[in-house]
Image (cartoon, rainbow, N blue to C red; front, side, top):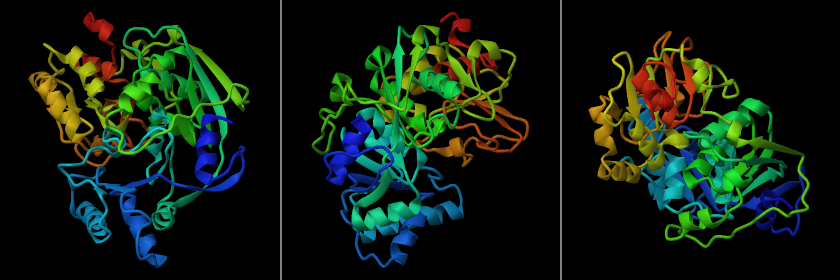
Length: 419
């Protein structure tokens, strides 16, 4: 079996599962946010459930329109708070204790290798970086799982992506996954497990792995996953709140498709409007002027992402025609960035540093685009109207390219700044 099949089999209480098989499986963690949880809560009440299956396995995180941007957002967040209080949930994260959900849960050791995690958010697939099976589901499935502790699945076919060769300067996990999506398309892995492997992945630090698995859904994937190893162990040791298990794919297992990439040929990559698959090398887009830069989100709001941006911004200023907004993904990341002096670098560069929130990524608040405006962002989607006006444009990139673009006032690369 593949690593994905092994985790699903273990949670379904079966020795073997095969692609296409329908199973019921026990879940280790359920999560939802201030947009999706209210629907789940209403459905939970509608089916007559009196209590949750486990008060320590349900995480409710107001992060999309929080801090609450208007009355409707406040009402949504209030539902989470009241439901959490009435069921004595241990994993409710209020503003001030919260972070962007897919950065917060791994950081807090609440997702561990070998887990089966479902979330009412499509980027739940992020946790595959830890060697867990994690996938987004509908709010009604979350409601049923909150009551029963189980969810149904169709076992996905697995695709293997092998990355070999040495990464070029300023190329990281974001460039690898954008290159991959550009190659296979936004439906190239539809309802399939995307297994990332090869020497370049084995050398990739955890923050790069989290970024890659985060965007598996942008290729249509059911989940993204990386076999756990020493890097995984170093990350989870000391933070894991539960026992964990390392699974790996059998050598003789067959994949529906195997794709190989020579990383020495992959350059800093940008996804152009209006699809994550519309990719081009950053160096080919130097004629594109920008109005806004966003660095953050569940894709690239980790401490290492902020360090990368700070390396480029140090001693420089944001272009006078550009506004730059940074979102540390959790309170801990915010504190660490503050201690390291990163926030001072950004503020000295005349950028804005925000509280942890999903904010502009989904066109929510704190960075909405007007008609005709262009942004380059380290977020994960650039569909029409994603970050504001339907006639605005969003370009997706790594923190390095986004930061260099903030200085240049147009899409560009760190090399243009002599870095």
